[in-house]
Length: 445
Image 1: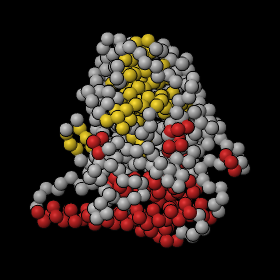
Image 2: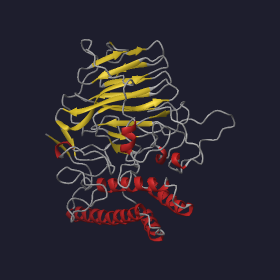
Image 3: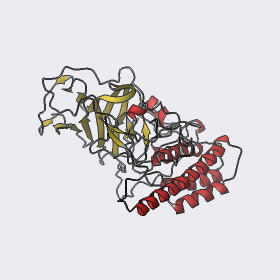
C-alpha cells in the first residue's frame, strides 16, 4: 500500500485530516484556497443547493465577495460567455480542486452535490464514507451522474462494483461504450468508467479498490455560472476568488460553508445501493488501495511533506518542530489560509474602498505564487512592501492577515536557506542531486 506524506492545503475550519498512517494526499496542482471566517477554510464552501440568483445590487445583506475575475471573453454576438476554468477533481480522502484551481479538503461523511447545472441537464453527487483501512479518513465510495435533461443517471458503487443506469444494473466490458438513448455515454476504461453527459461534460472515475477517485471537466459549451456546487462555480473567468457560490447564488465565507451548503437534502439524493450485475465491468485496482496514493491522470501531489508525525500543522502555525525548516506543504497551507482571510476582508461591506483596493493588489501578488507555495524573491519583496504599507484600521482580521503574511515570508526565507544548504551539501559530496527536501515521501507498507 503506497503512502504519500503530502497533505493538500487545509482551510482554517476544515475537518481533521487523517492521522499519520493515512497522510492526506494533495491533489497537486496547488491552486489557491479560499478564505474562511477569521480562520475558516476559504476555498468555496464544502458541498450543497442550486438555482442560485445573483444578489440584488445595493443590498448589503446579499453582497457577494468582490473578485478580480477576468472579464469574460468579448464577442461581437450576443452569445453568453462560456466556461473557462473547467477541470475539477475529488481524489483520495478527498482532496478537491475547483475549476479555477482552488484546493481544499472535504473530510466530512455523507452525500454531496459536487456539481449541478442550473439548466437541469447535468449533476454529480458523491457519497463519502470511512476508508476501511482507517475510518478517520473519508473517501468517495459512490458517484452518481445525471447525464441529460431526461433525468438519466449513472451510478457507480466502489464497494459492490455495481454500475447502474436509472437504478438497474448494467455491464459494460473493458473498452466498450454504453450509449444512453437520451444523450450521454459510459465507457469502461479498464481502471474505472468515463461518464460523458449529453452536453459533453466528462466525469472520469478510477476504481481504487474500495473507493473512487474522480476527475474530469465541465463542457466549455456551458454558459458562465451554469454549473455550481461544492466543487465551486464554473464560469467565464479563471479567478478562484469567486468560486464559493452557495445554493442561493451568493458567495459563502469559507470552503467548509460551501461543503455544508451543498450537502444533499431530503428528496435530492440519487445514490441508492444496487446489486452488481455479475462482474460490473471495471477492473478494480488493488483492494485496499491507499487514498493517499496519487490518482492516475489526476494532478500530482504538491511538493512538500507533512511533519514527521504525519499530521498536518494547524493552518497559520509554524512546523511542528520549530527548529525544522518548513516544507512546501507548510507554505501552501499557510498561503491558503492567507488567501481565505483576504477573501473575507474583500467581502466586508464596512471596509473602505481604498483599503479594498490595497487588498486587491495584495491578492494579485498572492495569485502569482506558484503551486509549490514558494514566493520567488521579487514576489516576496513585493508582498513584504505591501504588508509594511498596509494602513491599520482597527480591523482584527486585517491585523491577523498582516501577521500571517509576515509569518509566511519568514517561512519562505527559512525554506530557501534550507534548500541552499541542501544543494551545497550535495555539491560538496559530489553526489547526484537527491529529491528536493520538500518532495513527498513515498513508502510501501
